[in-house]
Image (tube, rainbow, N blue to C red):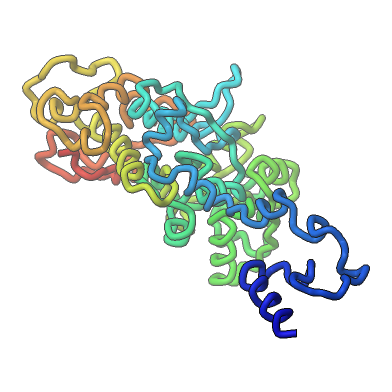
Length: 388
């Protein structure tokens, strides 16, 4: 009997998990209930692997462990950009099926900086609801998709690199409604896209002013626009730039009025995943290059190849001194690649947003000053950290 228990506990120390299954050290014959083959009760390798599989975020982190996103992008040879493809001026498909727009050129500027080619971008259209998961998981390198910078998104989604367009939420109505102020919309039906700051803002505005809105939500801007144009609601609300873009696509744009005023602050700009400070700094620097190139009067057609004698221009273009390019893993002449590839901030704005009627003069999206900056500031809020 003693030998039996010595034998039993010795085996238990080695194979504790299977004692109950195979009767290690037992002298009595196993009953039919315990005589099934061991393999029939053990988890398969596939099941064990599935149980241990990391979440998407964990998998991304492990895949990139020890490898910077900058190096990952260069090894891949393309920049993956989360974008819109249905908002004229900002991100949409042109008649040739090309993804174009203000936000699109911001991604192309980053590709020009890190890959030397503004066309080395894979655009991934994402809905408002898909934006957060796309950037949280790290499946995209950058998101440039008319996305508002908020404190909760900064904490939970990723790092907002730079405000590149200042906006605010407004209302559009059919001109036939005869409304001239947003405060006259009491009891109105309002179309809004769900999963956006727009939806939250309209609820706050409704509660604060007892507007008694009937708020109708839709999964994307296409469906909310269609609901508005079909008469399902009295007003469409979103960022004013979005209203301008939407109205421009209507068959009879003059039949619709964008009411004066805004109910929110909507700073828009590119976002990068959390966890890589170098990549965050690279994208911020590229946005600053676009802004300072306009400030210093450097356009896609006037990129200098030799020192100009203007210290700020020469430093920006990598012709004299440095503003930290090497520390970021960028070439000394990175600004030349960016401006030749997409132009400066003003060129991008003029190319995509001026045709919509989004004038810069007198707006918050005007440059903060003209260079040299002897009498700054001068009106606008487009500004970046000094490149030096």
